[in-house]
Image 1 (cartoon, rainbow, N blue to C red):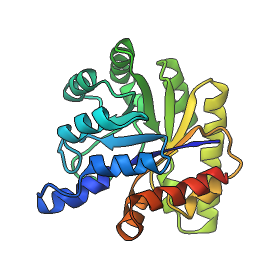
Image 2: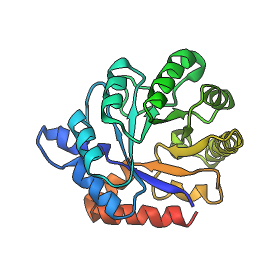
Image 3: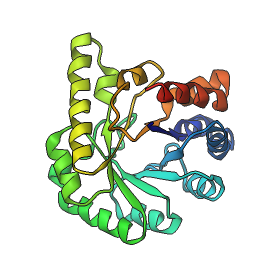
Image 4: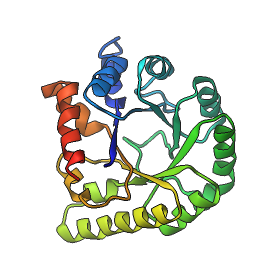
Length: 239
């Protein structure tokens, strides 16, 4: 059965909208863990638009499951990761103009630099995942540079409007998951997955874990974090 890692970035988004000290992402992380989440995800961006460094450190010190730190491949973030020692680092692309991460990391273009980052993190005992589009060339390079796992970018499928478009995008995810699994890469999936789109993944046993944030945080505004996580977990368990 696939696991569920809960991203609490957008709890921090609410806080930073008013530049106050609430709501507290660490409290949301505890609630998600209490409800059964297998891990907590935070994306420490270069522009610090939501999660702050103190959030990463506090969450690392209090959770009992695992901390997955999403970050860009920069020397600043490497230094923080080596100091904080999250359980896993997920390397992601990042631009200041984007609302959210808009696609996978382009390993065809950035293979050498990402490989150096992977080596540095793994030498410190940190597992490395790479957030990539469901593309065969990207998967082959992730395997070549010895990443521990990949996270398949599911945004194009989740944002698709027509049934034909959805089928096309989901077939890419299926192929990517199966190929990565054959290459002995652990396979995670995330971006844009909600309480409806998660149902499409039924039977895709190659996926080890789903990384889901915005839809859970959005529901938690109305139901509370624990209930929102339980609702998603029930859907993940049904896959």
